[in-house]
Picture 1 (cartoon, one colour):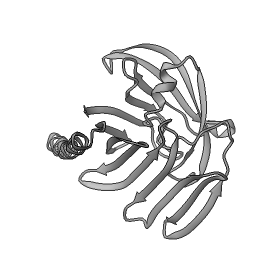
Picture 2 (cartoon, one colour; picture 1 turned 45 degrees about the vertical axis):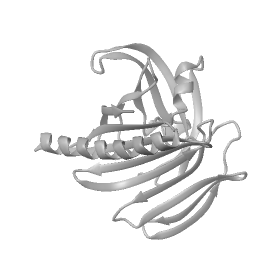
Picture 3 (cartoon, one colour; picture 1 turned 90 degrees about the vertical axis):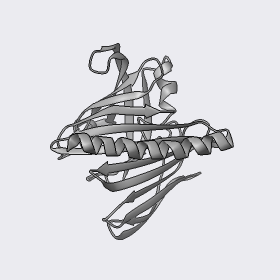
Picture 4 (spheres, one colour; picture 1 turned 120 degrees about the vertical axis):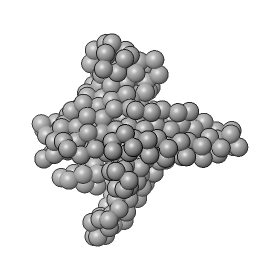
Length: 237
């Protein structure tokens, strides 16, 4: 049964890839599709990422599936510097559809969360960018290849107890090493909230050194949830 599910997901990925590559070839833009598998306790999720380069930056679509059901979707728009300009999050079956946009006075978050309307402005520190889709935001490769040891940024949570709350996070480099598990040299980056909130969550993401592609995650789940393990299982471009 698991093998059949994997084959079904790969066929779905192929259909998405064909559509993206057709669009890319007809418009002269870059496109890529990635598929990740997450194990969280007894639950298994699959994440489909599609990246499109546009004249003004990048658009990233994300769909999370549990079995054949799509649980939520995200659409991220960034500028040429990869910093987030807008982000839409839809959680199916829970009356959640939220749009966040960058404004001069902060991040405007509006929409419906669990059936309740929300309309908030969250101020940002000028020195800390909004990077919503960490670590999948393509701009992370600039950090991986730089001499910087740590960056700090803002991101909006999608799970309780920080659902639709914006918080500050840090990403800190650890030793680069060859990984037998991922069969390549990897740069390990530890992500966590800044300040006292780091007590509640942190996790290690592994970036392939040759191209700064995320190949896996090992660490905590959301507070109150089991630890998680995510692995890149297919990539096409």
